[in-house]
Structures are given as C-alpha cells and as structure tokens.
Image (cartoon, rainbow, N blue to C red; front, side):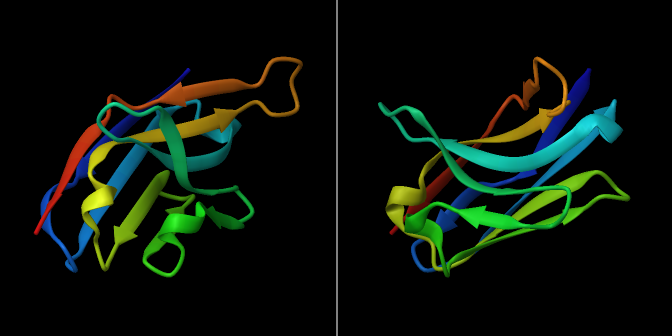
Length: 120
C-alpha cells in the first residue's frame, strides 16, 4: 500500500504562483510514476503533470511553460510549481501514484485532494 498526502495550494491570483507538494509513504519502492491530476468544477479528473522514477516529466498542453514538476526520490515527494496562474487552473488537485508496473495488475493510488482557487 502507498499513502499520499498533499499540501500547499489554496488561493492564488491570476498571474501569480502556487506550489503543491505530495509526500508518499508505505511501499514507496514500488512506485514508478508520481503526478498531479486536476478536477475542475463540473469536469472530469485530468492529468496535469507526471514524472517517472527515471525523471522523465510530462505535462498536459495547457500548463506547459507555466507549471514545473519535480521529484525527490529520496524523500518520496513530488512537487508542482504553478506559475502564471489562470482562472482555469482552479480545481481540486490530486496526487497520484502508479506502482508495481511490472506486475500483472499495476496499482493506482490517490491522495485526498487539495483545492486550488485562482481569482482575478
């Protein structure tokens, strides 16, 4: 089992910055990918950014150049630095982990979510 706990977020201004952090615990050595998903009001949950254990990042198109994901494998943390915020960045952000990718049934883990509100 893997547990994910998010921190940061809150209220930000258009054009401003916010930082999200997520700490993983439990069977962290089974984790391959860590990332952040976002669920805007009335919308489905979508992937914002992720990073494999090898350090390869990926971003959804709408945040490229504005958000930076970083990972510390020693501390089992994944961070999301959000800059040049837009109102459409508002939503609940979830930390996500993919573990045991070589097993017949890889596992998904989710944090409880942390709200981010961007106001003008």
